[in-house]
Image (cartoon, rainbow, N blue to C red; front, side, top):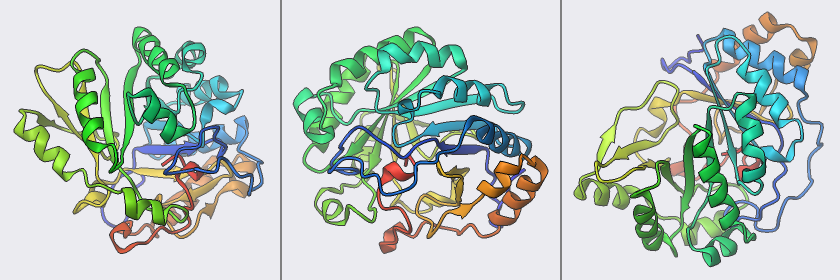
Length: 322
């Protein structure tokens, strides 16, 4: 089992398979994707080795992220490799959903168990203003198809000051009949968005207070779940989650590690640097890679220090998929 010096156990790997994204979200890539790194992304056999190593150390959940993971043509094959690795029982992806209706069945057939879709607004004009794309109807159609296929579906919405009240009200109405988990995520400061962060950051704490006042009840987290505080209500088909990285003790329940599309281990989304695993990955030596992972985990810090303005090596969230 992967365990750090603070007693935290790591059941969950977030694996980026590309840093390329075709959206231009205001809070992440307002100028679009800039090709400023080599694009020699991990290949299928390398992903195989990496996932085997993590699975042998107790990882049970893999989330495939980007950038936008569906930009890789071999995404179904990657899902299949992960799904057929002994010990891995949950395979998820996070996507912007731009081709969801036409792709999601192939992902499900390959072994996908859950899907996270980024959707910051239910208002088509706001959605277009935030993302740079008029794709809301496509994404909504894709969500319906994913649910029909039996996938567990979550929708991610970044809390943004100009829209926060309207975001909450419109999503609450939508969740009356929509059996998904809607997760509001506090905007996080990165290296490239500091001015935007200062103008647009809003805390999730008032949303939590409002939910509790309206009869929503917090539910227990699974061992391999992400960092969201999740709430349910008997009158709603869907649930609400809150991801509040600036809240007290947010890092105390950390259970996830990240590997970049270039094969670098990031002990935290806001770590100062990625730790290169690729030379070992390329040898195919799973036991040696496992020894390296155990050794590197000893360097994981107690906190991300976001509240002190630390952003580490994370220039934007597309680097590691958040």
